[in-house]
Image (spheres, rainbow, N blue to C red):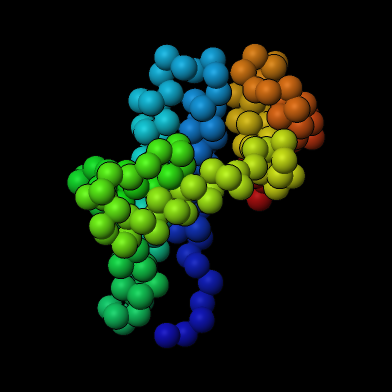
Length: 189
């Protein structure tokens, strides 16, 4: 297969979809805030699955083009990492419940402990809970959250709303991000 740049219409479609996914990711973060206690379960699930579905559309769109230009099916399957694709329709499985129990500091039932995968995921959840860092402890997380919130505030022209739902240190950095972003301008030829 020869090396050619991505066709412009495909590139533009991918940029649009990735932007949509990022906005959904920002909303996932937004619905984790304390003022959203009444709706966090529903909205974090909606927006996280919306983001995942949108990124799946990106992958499938790229895959369709790669197949069209002659990529071998086995290479395409490998690049799509299909063996890693989880099936949400089945809902949480025992290994998911084991991971959550570890995160929440709960013990596993004897039946759950009998499965090595469950023990490993439970241990991973415990380790993650013990070593968890919030945005205030991890500059990379703080910057990522601030960028997402600041971008959304700028796009919605609602920078003032940042103070109403974010912890002050996140709101301060998000406001700085929003302030340096210019309002989007149409491209000129």
